[in-house]
Image 1: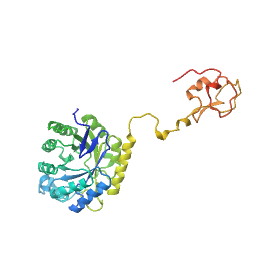
Image 2: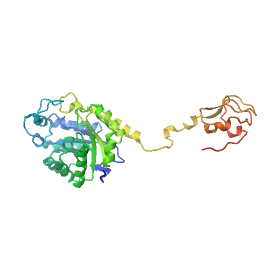
Image 3: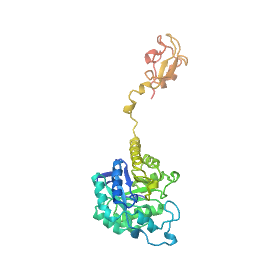
Length: 360
C-alpha cells in the first residue's frame, strides 16, 4: 500500500526527513502544573537541552471529554487512578490564553513550537497563531473529522500510532491523502504510561516506512532514552519525548518524562547514533590511515639459503603487511629460494625461483 507523500518537509525552516538530522521534539504536555511561568521555564530548559522543537497540547477539559463520573469516565489504574477523565484534563490542559506567549518564547530561542489539537476549535486557535505543523495524538487517530481538518491546512502532520490497529493506521493515512495532505510522518508509539522497554517492538518502525513510504519516528513513553537512541539507529527521523523540570514535582506526566540533563544526554546520543549510521562506504577511512601496512603478509621466519625449499617452517603469514600477499602462499611453498634470505625479511618476487601467477 503506497501513498505519494513527501520524504522531506520543513517545520518553520527546520528540515525533517531525508538528509536531515533526526528532529527531537520536547513534549511539554501538562508538566507545567498550571503555571504559565513554569510552562515558559519548560520551553527555556528544553531549548537549552538541545530540543529541535517544542510541542504542547491544545484542548480544554470540555473539548476533550464530558464532566461525568460514570464508570466509563473514571480511571481505575495506572498513574492517574482515581480521577475522572474530566479531572485529569482539567489539571493537565494548557490554557489557550497561554499559547501566544509559548509560541513567542520558543521563537525567541529560534526553534519551532507546534501542538496537538483535539478538536476543530483548537485547530482554529492554532491557525490564528500560525502554527507551523500539527500532531495527532494516538488517542485521536480514530477521529477522522479532526484528521481531515488538520490535513486541509496543508501543513506538515505527524500522527502517533499508539493503540491503533494496522487497519486504523491505513484509514488515517488515506484520510490525510484524500484531504490533500502530502506532508505526513508516522510515529511508532506504545500508549502505555510508562511503556515497558519490552513492549517497544522497534522493528515496527521499518515496517511502517515500508508499508506507507513516509517519514517515520518514535513517540517514546519509556522511562529513559535507550528506545529513542535505538530507534534512530533503525531509521527514525523524528523522536518525541516528554520533558519535565523535575520528575518528582508531581506534574501529570513527570513519571515518564526526562529532566533537562537527561534530555540533553539523549540529544547527544541521538546525534552520535545518527553520525554512526553514515552511508554505505567501503573506502579507507581517515582514522584507518596507515593501518593497512600492519595487516598480514608473507615473511621469512627462519634464515634461508639459496636453493632451500620454502616450507611452513621458514615462511609464514604474519603481521606487518609489507611482504607478498597471503594469497600467494600455496605458490611459494615447495619452491626453491633464488638467494639467501634472512629471518624477518618481507618475502618478495625477487626471492622466488619461479614467477608467481597473478591472482585476484
